[in-house]
Image (cartoon, rainbow, N blue to C red; front, side, top):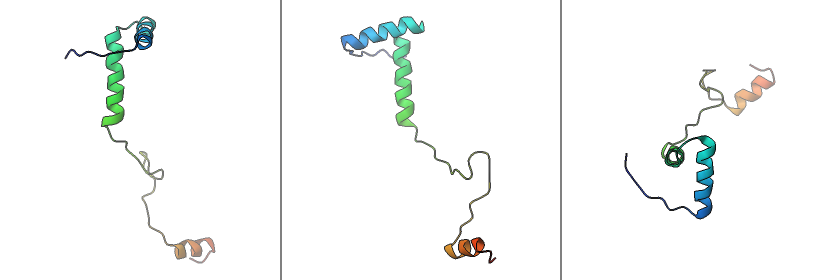
Length: 77
C-alpha cells in the first residue's frame, strides 16, 4: 500500500468524519472505496449487448430487407 495526501475542504472533512462513524469504517477505507469506484467507472469500457440476444441466447440476428418484410406482412411468402 502506498501513502498519499488528499486535501479536503472543511465541509468534506466533516462529512467524511460523519460517514466514518455512521459506517463504522476508518476514513482511509472510505476514501479507498471512493477511489475504486472512480477507477471502475473510468477504466473499464462499458459492454453493450443486443437486446435480442442478451446473455440468455435468443434467436441469432438474421438480416432482412424491406421487400421481405412487406411480403411477410401481406401474407405473400
